[in-house]
Amino acid sequence: MSSKDSSRTSRAARWYGLAGACLIAVILAGVLVYFYFPTRSSNPSASVSPSPTLTPMPASPSADPFRQFDQEVASLVERQAIWQAPKRLDVNRTARLGLVIGDISALRTQIRELVPGTYPQPAGQVKVGSTIGVQLEADPGDASVTPKDAINKSTGEHTALLWTWFVRGTHPNPELFLKAHIVVKTSNGHVLSTELPLSIPVGRTWQYTVGQIFTNWATWLSIAGVLSGAVLWIWRKRRRQPHASSHQHKPLPRSRMHVGRGQRRH
Image 1 (tube, helix red, strand yellow):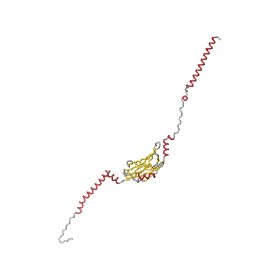
Image 2 (cartoon, rainbow, N blue to C red):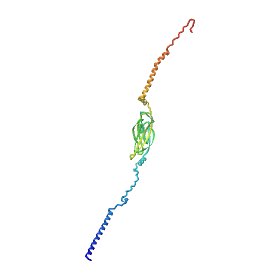
Image 3 (cartoon, rainbow, N blue to C red):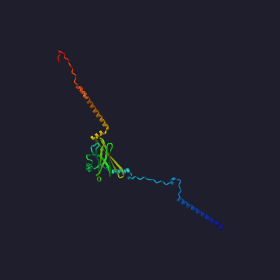
Image 4 (tube, one colour):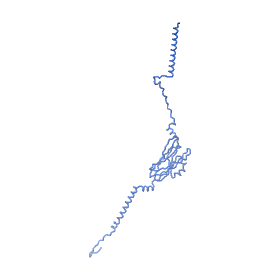
């Protein structure tokens, strides 16, 4: 083999080696691009990862405020409510009445001392909790109400509660309407309200009648007009009476008869 043929062979070998190295480089570059830089597909659904599906969790019983309130109300105990009230009130005179919730026998002494002269009147069943308050309400135009005592003789689950008020009727009324507003607070801050009505007649007194006459100027003026008219009528009647009596007692003139001679008087 000549020197010219050997040089051509070595040059071809170098070109083949360079071509093989380039091919290997291209293959490695494609592998790197494929693994580290994935191409986007023409399908949009393949390029966007699906959003996760949220499954709603069942609500916890403690998270429902209405259910919790119903459960707490159901856990409250019921007790008998009894009014301690007089049979009637006198207008403009302060009287005392009370409301008992629970065992009335445990409050006999307090009832005799604080609301004497009252009679028990059943008011119905009410819910009782650890925190309870009672307010007595009335129409301000009919009566004034002043709270007085709040006594708790309860022991454990044995309930014995007494509230008293001063009540003063402002005018006669066949039925003075009173209302006890009972509020029970639960542990979560909810409020349970109950209303107990009571009706008591308010009677008239002679002091109220006299005071009403003297404070009512229209009535007073009408009475004065009637009295003055009666006095004037009596005075005029008495003034005319002497003239009438003088005419009645005045002697009539006697008629004279001339009797002639020969005539006799009969």
